[in-house]
Amino acid sequence: QVQLVESGGGLVQTGGSLRLSCALSRSIFSFNAMGWYRQAPGKQRELVARIISGTGTNYADFVTGRFTISRDGAKNTVTLQMNSLKPEDTGVYYCNVVPFGIAGGYWGQGTQVTVSS
Image 1: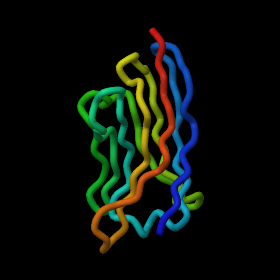
Image 2: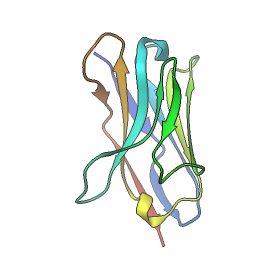
Image 3: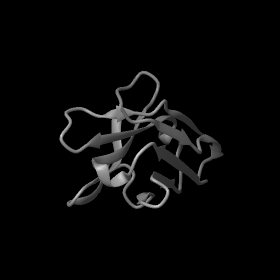
Image 4: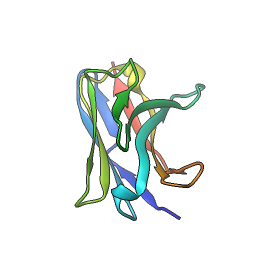
């Protein structure tokens, strides 16, 4: 079992920045993949960015150049730095991790991001 605790969501104006953090209950090096997803009202959950062990990072086209995903082995956290936010970035953001050797993954409780126009 893995616990994920997200923080950093909130309300920001268009063009502003937010930093989301996901604290994990065990070492980040035990995970094959770590990422952030989001779900807007009435829409399906979608990938925002993720880190895949031994491969690197990938981003959804709609955030490339604006968002940066990173991880900290000392703190066991995965962070999403979001800049140049747009109203269409509004939604609930979820942290997701997939341990090595285990099918499926674990989800955080979600954190609300609201971007006002």
